[in-house]
Image 1 (cartoon, helix red, strand yellow):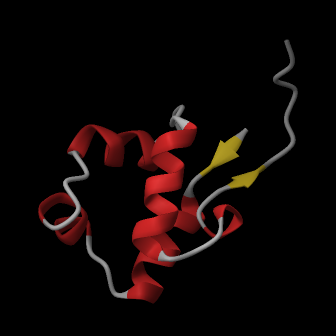
Image 2 (image 1 turned 120 degrees about the vertical axis):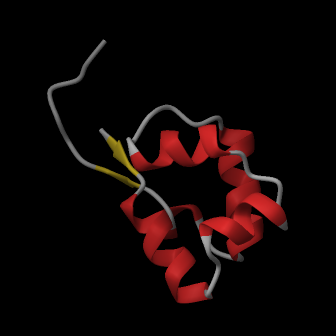
Length: 70
């Protein structure tokens, strides 16, 4: 399972609010919903979020081992 809890911690550390993401960076509420619920996010979007937060991918997401296999 991919979890995005680190994303919200990184936002707090960088002083960026969800309002800032929405207004300044044009991140829509649907994406924030996906992040809050650990849903699928495109790699292109993850790249943009890393650029906004000036961080590495592991700063915004983590893999938790589970029984989800092909």
